[in-house]
Image (cartoon, rainbow, N blue to C red):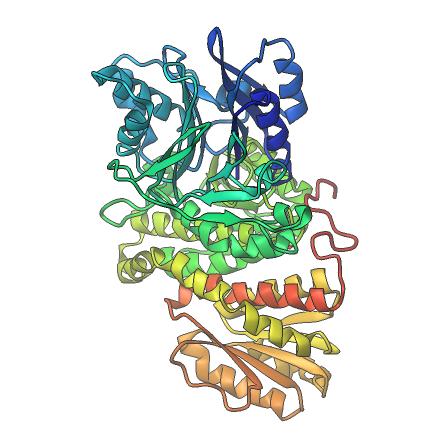
Length: 611
Ligand code: F6R
């Protein structure tokens, strides 16, 4: 996501903070900014685009300071532009805040602050924090930045890593975290802060990793850490021995692996603020009126590659939940079709980048029929986010590995929320399925952590798969949709031939390909088809294919499977999110064993902006 750096010490603070920010450029961002305290008071400089633009802008400032905080922004609330870039200030311009994360109750806080006379200069959730801190300082008899930040954060729901400067205490900064990473680097008469260890490694390897609920006063002498009630807490120092390249990837060998590990957090962020206290889905910001939703009589889901596979999962889910016809299309086919569309069709375009040429062409085609268009998209300022009638932003943050992993999970999460939202409004007959899925949603991140922990097992399994002459992924229903994505992942990064089949189709042809050396991965997570899957896998064993089975915990282990992977048990409709994680890991480890350039597979690009 966004990047934060800060510096306090004897070096020029502004240029040091900006140089450290460059170490976080790989994450992707759309604007950058810095705040510092000069003899003239608190100053802020921001620029749209690359960090070099910020460096040119700051050249005109007298940026002499021993303390600075800096930020690269990846837009989540408000389009990418200078006004929405961090740092954000209070009304008086004495407080500056940089923030990663999402303030869920920002709309209400903003309304209340405006009623109390505050004026806002951005569309961001972050700016509310600057005004809240301003109020806490104004209301205190002996204003103190740490207390003000703590008290302001008590009013906030959501996730944050924040760093704050105040002109009233020019020799310190205050930082805090909840559900968003932040570290403090301890140097020799200098202190650094950052959202990622990489950013401070040039100056120190002595690091304090803050934990959720921590708030720290950072001065040149060190850091004093408390919880939000002001009780002192001690955190151990960590000695970092990573080399520079590994550091960028959070200690992982490749971005793809790092991004698989970020899956649970991505899902948590995409769900954040989307469930009301009553447990219903809140997508009111989509901007689709109740009348428009009531008029929908058909849904089309459209995407390419992995995004299309998210649509294949969602088609089944939507049909089960909203009991109306739902279609799923590959965008490159759809754009040249002669579609049956009208103003009562909801067309959902799914895309990580929001720039895929075929998906954009499908969007424009749908718009020409006056259909209702909705983008499920990861990049807020992208063409899809701008041109669709409505947008649902997935919260995966920048995805660097060419093979999509965490963005797929974010797409499935967003589509699950959308399906529930539509069903709540128009399909009372599926209320019990709706509540079964809603109840399970909050446990999803935890189950996903358990799936990520299967990495050593998938590594071991990859030794066999890497030697296979070919791989089949078989499944029924939701499992077939996951099989499609699993096969794509394996072939695109390991260059091993892989195919997905609906398990019942094998005997209509592809079974002829099964022979010794072929691995068949059976996805057996669906209650209604479990026994059928076992029979299909027996047909494979009878032809000497090696069988690997994925089953939910507690299910009968297939006797003919050479390896069985057990997954957490959850409602069938959510199993695709869990099942894909070990299969992403399998693809990763197979590619590693085959010596493939995992983050940049041959012939592929991250954003396919040509036809
Ligand atoms: C596969 C992969 C691609 C993309 C596809 C669509 O791992 O990443 O198949 O899913 O090119 O890209 P977006 O989602 O940016 O439209």
